[in-house]
Amino acid sequence: MLDHQKLFGQLEKVSKELFLKFAKEQDIAKTVWNNVKEDEELCNKVHAKKYSLLLPKWIGLLGQSKKIDENLVEYSVLAVDGSQIYYDKHQGPACYLLNVGSVLLEYKKVKSTVALHSEPSLFIISDDNKQMSSTELINAQREEFELDKAWQLSFVQQSKNDNKPYVVLFDGSLIFFQLDSKEQDEKQSFLQKYFDCLNKFYEQKILIAGYMSFPRTKELVNILKLALAQFDEHELEHAAILDQLTDMDVASYFLEPGYRSITFQSKAPISYLYPQPLKPYFCYLHVGSEIVRLEFPAWIAQQANLVDQICKVALDQAHKGKGYPVCLFEAHEQAVIKGYDRELFYMMMQKMSHNKNFQYKKSLKSLKKQYVPI
Image (tube, rainbow, N blue to C red; front, side):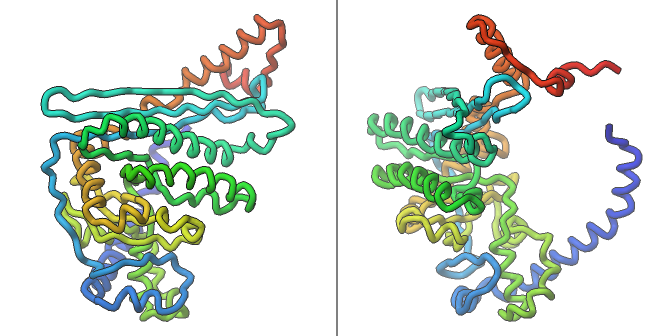
């Protein structure tokens, strides 16, 4: 049990140092920003040689921003999210569950509609696929299912051909960093599945984007760190004073509510494995309550009007959701597996095993978690 009084005392001790240091970082970062925001050669300077920092590419001035037209009445937006019950060695049979939820919102002048969807998929772990018991691989498979479900629903939606704007939003990044640490075979296998699905959106020219609320990315911060170090790798240690900042802090220097940044190309190592039309790009958008990061494929980034279309929908959804896209919130609600769902899942397995005259084995640890007398 957390001792609130002791915690408050510790926070009091560090608060002065913590917040004064952050304020100093902000002052230094703003000074560097003002020095580089209109430097037309900055991108060339940044990429003149290789650095240890993750640095994006871009065209134009770093400090440019664009007002997003908020006049959007009729459009459709699909959001897809996923959840899971991981394999638990303390619970009966070796299996895991994926649940993919979605919401399709169609805004019309006369009558708007909503379509909710949720689909569970149960998987048995056997000697042939023991590696799939790991949480990382289950997460990777869930991502595959989310992309595939989004494509299936989008294909149906496209057949309506109503010529109204249509955008698919995913919660989180379209840069699959989580695969970086995987074995080459596993990485390649999942990437190919992801790319096959993303390519279908490309072929049908269906707009997609990853929506990142409260992004912790640091590519813009890294640009400022490099500029502070005078583009000298050996001097980067002196730029460590900016380490607590994120791109959200930097974007706040030049983005007003309703504005987006220029588009940036991600140069993350895994991005080099993406096919050319699918290479990941991103921009920052001020939705009023916060600055978010939107990620999308190259074929979208290369047409400013398509980026603007995604930003329009994302902005309108954030306004309708009072700060966070209503479609993403509803998709999460359809996908999420809550505590009582988890208990029901295990109870259903236990009941079924009894009906089939099988013994359902649970560890003492799991039984103790259910009830611990004091």
